[in-house]
Amino acid sequence: MRRPVLDLRQVTKTYGAGDTAVHAVAGVDLVVERGDYVAVMGASGSGKSTLMNIVGCLDAPSSGRYLLDGVDVGRLQERQLSLVRNRKIGFVFQSFNLLARTSAVENVELPLAYAGVRPAERRRRALAALDRVGLAGRVGHHPNELSGGQQQRVAVARAIVNEPVLLLADEPTGALDSRSTADMLDLFDTLNASGRTLVIITHEDEVAARARRVVRMRDGEIQTDVRSAARELAP
Ligand SMILES: Nc1ncnc2c1ncn2[C@@H]1O[C@H](COP(=O)(O)OP(=O)(O)O)[C@@H](O)[C@H]1O
Ligand SMILES: [Mg+2]
Image (cartoon, rainbow, N blue to C red; front, side):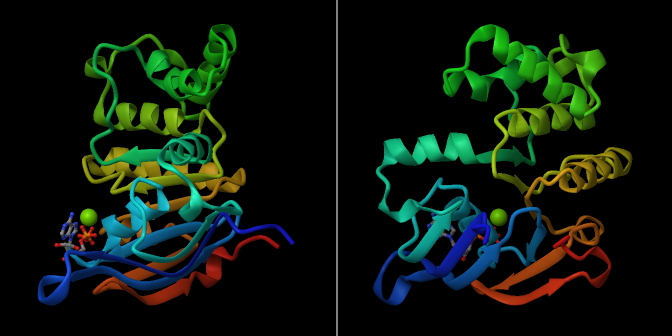
């Protein structure tokens, strides 16, 4: 059997202590198999970002167990954790987070540089990733020469260039107009169809409607977890 990409068991995150303790994540069980496309929804304050920080190895849970691609990340020290993060997860943020003074292809090369890939190979793989997101004609442009939608596609290319097991996005269409949002959703469909595992935080129904599975959070817990009948995961 293939190991799941994510396997969280009774994961909690509590801020503060005693009477003022906030149970931001209050006992979450979540298994995400390879090739799935999951939208995480929920009202503001329901724990989405806290859960995503844990999933993204940016923050440690207070209790519970978390296996990322079979690795028990709860046992890792900060240095190992950042290695695992770099190798296994590609991040996309609402605000793109590109380096302003750096061309598209150089932005995409960054994770490869951290991973120690040689320059020529870096360039080859970054150009291929930009081609996959439809930006082969813009590789030398700086972020301020690109539209919001194009900048977010550069961010997606940067997120997938390492071939991570998971693409993790926090409100990836939050800063995009409706046309660019539609393009981004088409791109997510294409990436998922080619086997990539996506977990996307969103408050937009339009985005969630494209996912195979919608997880709704409330008060730090998973309230509902619904798989779309029309978009079953291939066996
Ligand atoms: N660093 C923190 N310190 C204290 N409380 C926090 C911290 N981060 C988040 N919280 C609280 O945890 C709860 C969940 O927050 P968050 O995960 O940001 O929710 P969401 O992303 O769904 O809006 C909220 O009550 C929030 O106020
Ligand atoms: Mg949030």
